[in-house]
Picture 1: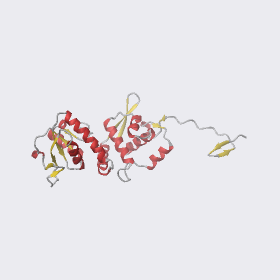
Picture 2 (picture 1 turned 180 degrees about the vertical axis):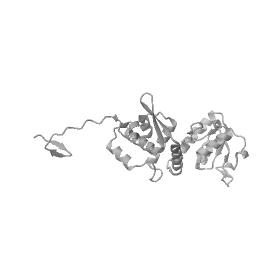
Picture 3 (picture 1 turned 90 degrees about the vertical axis):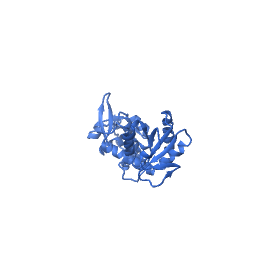
Picture 4 (picture 1 turned 30 degrees about the vertical axis):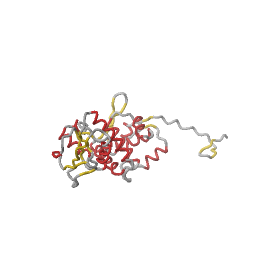
Length: 262
């Protein structure tokens, strides 16, 4: 009788090969029924099984970064496709799908159908809170913080100059404020002061510190550099000065005015 090698050993019986797994299929449970399940390579399945992006592991892990980037991408574009999401996150399509399902199960995102047989993903209030928590963890622990902060500050300074700003105030004493000060030194924009109610020192990086915005000299706008509660600082400044006059480096992952969940 003809033999067939199975797991490196000869078998005495022919076996029918299982049908090829489709590239995209739906499975039965409620999460998978709405999130299309592409084929996942077994190595990616093992990675997903051994990693929990709900953050019981130490901070600043790859799982934390992927989940934070996923929540941020969905916040920016709820109709983002899974394929583009995987490309932005730098992971396999199947692993991106696994992260989406896990975030949905944890209540970070809601998923709904949209026309053209696509899906839309929305951050829940729990998801917004988790994104803020992860952002704070990233800012506190990321080894690449200085490089990322410098790039963001330089881009933001150019944007402010294009808007006609020549004098700006910072909100919050932090490492980010010092990096912003270093970047501004090479551009035609003056930092008139830093507002921080908890500071007892009078200067940081040569910039005077004030405990209230009422003490500030005239300025064109404010830049959020508070790393402990950046969203709260942005919201408060927006109410005081108008949201058009408040800017923030992208790494703070501020939710723009009008995008808060109801």
